[in-house]
Length: 279
Image (cartoon, rainbow, N blue to C red; front, side):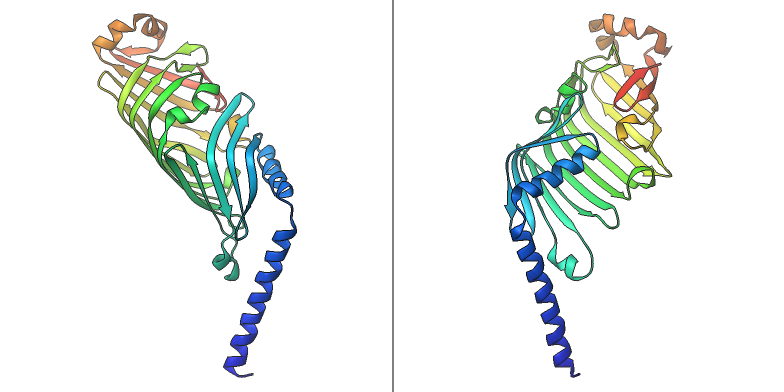
């Protein structure tokens, strides 16, 4: 067989495969595709709702007015979201799904490879006040501008990767751990690095730097399924300035048992990820 015939044959196989996939995709009702998304999230304990759901050319889906909720209420709302199968990756023998979403002026971009379990997510310019998680789960008011990078390979206890985040102009009010309130404060910068590996998530560094309060979180927890059931082994440190101590006397009075040195509080956090508790 001549090289030209080989190329023509290969091209014909590729074209036939693409056409078969395309027509199969066209025949699947949008409602069935939405059902697949709903069931995938339900397996992880979440519910999925969308005001609009349909197909996105080629080999994709799009949705608007998306809400993802957990047992305690809404966790995430997306104005728009799209996901498409990458044709180039498919022709190379790999399954890759790039996706994108918008939350207000903020953007989420990423890519998932189902076979390898690899995923990559970049978050830019998302306002914390547009994320319902803080109100529904933490019963707190949160403000700030979030940027984050997430890289993960594998899932569950076998997952490996990292999460890096930064929040500019953060303001947290009404935060509680269990029934114990934490001081309300603003922070110039919040930075965090969490590494996944060996069946555990380890907090390399997580700091909140404000003019009146410095906060540091450290520790680890196992990677479980579901994630919310992971038992916590964390320590939260608070280092307030005298002015904040004076203005929020009641809050710091409740934290007296955790005072290790003047102006330095150290609190062990136990419970599980979905319901942390102070020991």
